[in-house]
Length: 312
Image 1 (cartoon, rainbow, N blue to C red):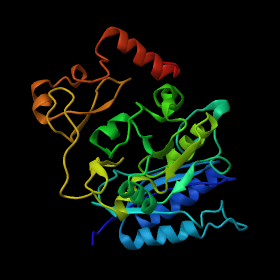
Image 2 (image 1 turned 180 degrees about the vertical axis):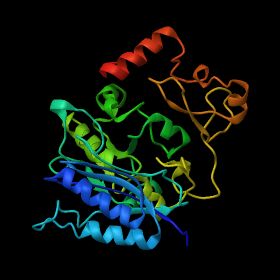
Image 3 (image 1 turned 135 degrees about the vertical axis):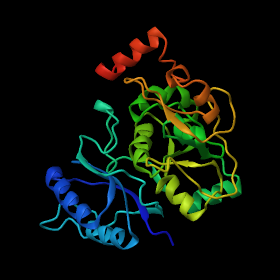
């Protein structure tokens, strides 16, 4: 058993006092020595934390005790925690913040309340049966493209998200599946709560979301129906689902099999991409290797406009 445990979780539910809930969290997590990231908004919570198994258990029990009764911040009694082995240094520190959304979508008038509209929750066991029985369905990956590159479900498609705000922009790429049974997937499930509801709002007829996301599927069926490694947002970068797996990621520059990520150094780009050690050594200026081609004048201007005005 690992000396550390990482939990990934979320819950869409009304939080009347996000600031108070943030302070409650900070006090509890500091007391337990937990590190990680927790985002809190009026619409709910989204977090990933690391600590000793005993202290993680205490945290989970404390959050479940927030059951919507008087004196609590909301109903979190049924939060599902996805667990994986930690390293003790998966996160540099503890960050707890209040945000407008627990996953930034900025859908405006098309915003979705997952408590009112969302795809059918598909249990990992049922998706497994669909694979085994040759069910006719299409998996749409709602993660960012760089996450897809290093690992993904068999038969899934990457619609080209650079961030979740791109959701409206990918509709033309997936409209062909409007009449088909579709399953939205992401790491822990939180993106799919809104993404699946958004697709329904836009006329998709038969929409499911993988309950608990890829993390829960990998817990139950490690390495099955999934090619490559699972990208995670901590110092591990990728999580091995099984030691016997193929590397599907490729260096953007030379094409060699690769699971090594680097960040573009340009301040308004910082795109994360796959790059082997050899290419980085031969071209220390990583901006020249960035697949966003932000080293060209036009793309630098576009990146700057996007960064400052969120319009490109």
